[in-house]
Image 1: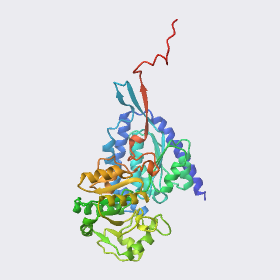
Image 2 (image 1 turned 120 degrees about the horizontal axis):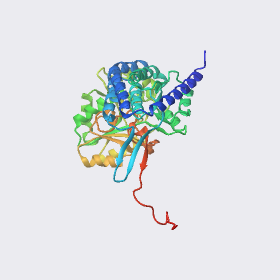
Image 3 (image 1 turned 120 degrees about the vertical axis):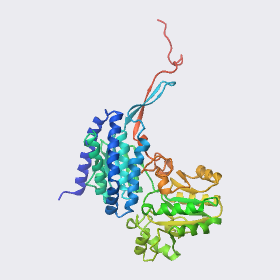
Image 4 (image 1 turned 90 degrees about the vertical axis):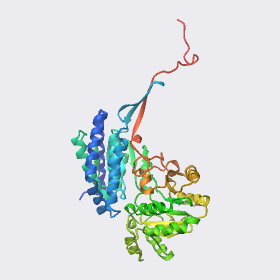
Length: 460
């Protein structure tokens, strides 16, 4: 048998070179040709959304098929609706007054690292924005999500090639190993790395020495102010944490409840399916989720409350949609204060928005710097103070964190790759989109003569 690392390395080289050759041809495509190809891929993705969602759950064991389907639709049709009119070929802007032309220029070949938590939707998203910007792309899936990612790319490639896309422009590695993924990132044909996944993967992407967009973890707090619509807040928090069993990095990780409304909020959340565990049950969950260290046990990711309870040796009702643990501190001594990509939610109480602000910042600094925060409040002064002062780049107001951050219920760019900015170790705090996958050339005419001292005349 051939060595798995060698097979993966060779495949990475072959796919990178093929994508480079195809991209050089695609460089000459018109905007109409690019958009026709993208539209064909979107149509195929929508038709396959449910099947790909089921495949993702079956292969990884994470999440809920129906919710994976919704994310697949977000990463295809909703994304395309948002970027369809974005110019990405030739002159994309002209400032007549300044005599300036902006000309789009693709990056080249993108190495796209995708996670096991949102494998098919992230693959759809990255392929679509890459091709819209006239790039080639090679997907390097997480080892536990190879088949569903490969099938996603196959669906897109067949549709795109029927519409005129060069063969080899998009591809997915099927022989996956760490050595192969590293070879792909380092390959001379790859111009840009687009990494979505765990902290180790993102650090590896940034260490290659090439331009890279990476995302960090999101220990997202949700502050509920005394001015909030409590019934709506309770419904949204529970639904968001339960969505796809909490595998989106912008999912709420801890409630920070304003003291005067905390009891009522807890009561309303219980009516929505939140089960508040005892301190002993919380300790058992903490040991299960974070044994032996601060990183979450992958076997607990994307699991239902009932599955977690069985694993932890505790009992929870069949009606429980999420588990809530009352916590007192933030940090290593309180295991459940960290990011939990599963259906466990922390609970804190704070008297007044200033104290709530301090607690939220504690949580953000403990593994969520730069990512996201959710606030439920009707007091615009409180909302704006949170917006101005929190060290995160998505402040989501009166909506579900899970769906708001990715652009399903808010006006932010639909995206499955959420930048945490410089404070989170990334180059941007944006929702990554097509605008990040091409450069802009400037064609600039003279608008003013040079100073005489810079260009002296010589009498002849």
